[in-house]
Image (tube, rainbow, N blue to C red; front, side, top):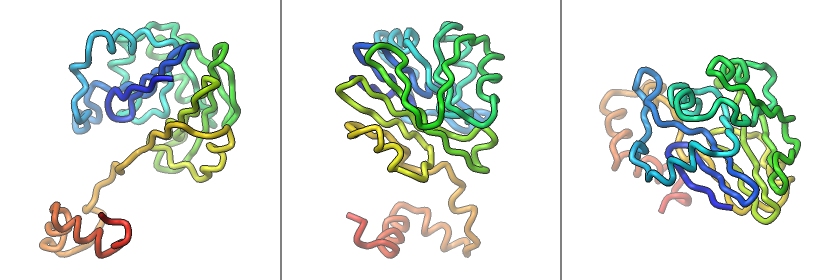
Amino acid sequence: MRATSIGHAGQLIETDAGSILCDPWFVPAFFAAWFVFPRNDQLADDLLQRIEQADFLYVSHLHGDHHDEPWLREHLRRDIPILLPGFPTREQQRTLERLGFTNFVRTVDGEELEIAPGLAVAIHVETSITDGPGGDSALVVSDGRTRLVNQNDCRTTDLGRLRAHGPVDLHWLQFSGAIWYPMVYDLPEDENSYIISAEGSRLEAARRAPSEVT
C-alpha cells in the first residue's frame, strides 16, 4: 500500500488491487476565505495523472474543504465508483449526482466491504449538529497486508470500533481545528493579543498542561 498526501485532508491510496482518491481539494472554498496551505496546485504531472485516474473516490463529507465541487466537476470521469458513507440522509449522493456522477457504492456504517479482489474498506459515520444532516465519516482501508485509517476531521467517539478491523499501520487524522479562536473567548483585548501571539500561545499551553509541552 502506498499513501500520498495531496494537500489538506486529501490522500491518494494506491494498492495492487486498486486506488482510492480521498477528499481532493484544490480550489479555494467559502468565498476563497479557505485555501490549501501549503499550496498543492503544482503537483508533478505523474501524480496528477494518478489522482485523476483513480479507481475509486471517497469524499468524507460535504464541507467545502473536502467536497471540492469545481475540481470534481472538471477532473474526474463521471462513472468513477464513489464510496458513499452510510449517512442517515441521501444528501451526499444527490449532491454528487447533480455534478453528473452515476456510480455509487453504498456502505453500511462500520461494516467491511470488499470493493475489489484483495481490497476492502469500512466507512464509519459520525453525525453532530456541526456537520449538518449528512455528518462526517472515517475510512478504513485494507489490502490484506496493510491497514490504513483515514480519520480526517471525523470526531469519532469510539476508537475501539476503528481498531476492531485489526492492527493499524497508518492513522491519518486532523491535527488542528477549524475554529474561530479567540473570537469565542470574552477576554480583555491585551490578553487576547498576548494569547494568540506565538510566545503567548506557547506559555499558555505550558501553563495549562506542562507535562504535554516540549
